[in-house]
Length: 496
Image (cartoon, rainbow, N blue to C red):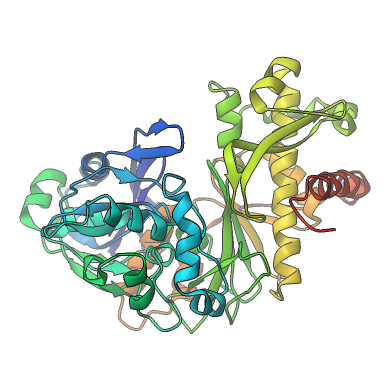
């Protein structure tokens, strides 16, 4: 009887729980929705719902196990969205709304945050972006929300605290966008003080895989998770997907096509690009780094334009486009305003170019048939992915390893084939590479004495399919990519 490991993914639209054995077989899983509240540049969620929905999903998953299997659960790890913060009280209970990863209310403080310690940020290879957590924490401080009995917590910290029963440390992955120095492993006290943030209001930071505490009796009563189960520090959702795909060798890369697009790879050093769009997570093992970035494009653009679309099921219809493909409009499908990777343009607005004229997604939906609009969005995202790889290569990163992909977008066969053709490389699709699987893998590594992370991930990650590029389409897609790049140059989003 092998051990069972629990991974929990707190996403944007849902929370998912996976219970996985040592060989990567999923013993149980469950998912429940999360509700967002958007108002202009603000995007909030209720942190109490992170706890209740994750708890209910965990109860469902644990409840579906055979009675003699529950006690095999040996550890839990949690991933969440990168840059989402809230405030908590002394026992870790949330005391204010969750300010989500793309909330731009503190955007005006981004410049101050960069100016607070520019040499440090340059050494780390990035610039603090307007929607990162550090400007939001400054906003919390200036609006009187970091009072004597309140502390900063990341999204994953809130759930871990609920499971343990007290405020917990954070991990260095979720803390990156809050300004934590992953090179020196310290909070930038001078920068925080300059921004009006009391460093004591920030959590202690530990390495991913560190035991944060053990689940308490109350959580056992709510969910069925055995009391005393170790809760291990996790990583952000993008890193979790990378772990789930076992993309951990030097030069390997993983793309998540979810609501947004996240690209991460493996290098032996921090990657520095001139624009500051790339940021490097510190890997949990072997002194390696996970450089990458998160774009604001993604499958969310499709569901925003066509809310009832079956993303996986539309693949057959798109295959019938055939000879119409060369006429599919170019696009940069942003839902809101602003782009953060592979270009930093806070003022960027999405476009679909029809007959030489740029239109918003909403306007394009009225001018194009649904399949042409979907194909245009998918082509645009594939071009953004290729532009991201070009940037990484120019910045000195090796990109010639295995490329894997996960997320809802990877379930559309037509889209994945288009991406393989346009990138000119094979794409491996793991059978299950959700963030929850990656966190189960991290928990298994952390909870098994003497385990090596790459070997643990390779054992527990199961390949579903490999999509090979078709050489007969390369010229056509190279031409479309060149048109896309020329359009961005004309808009001065990128340099010639």
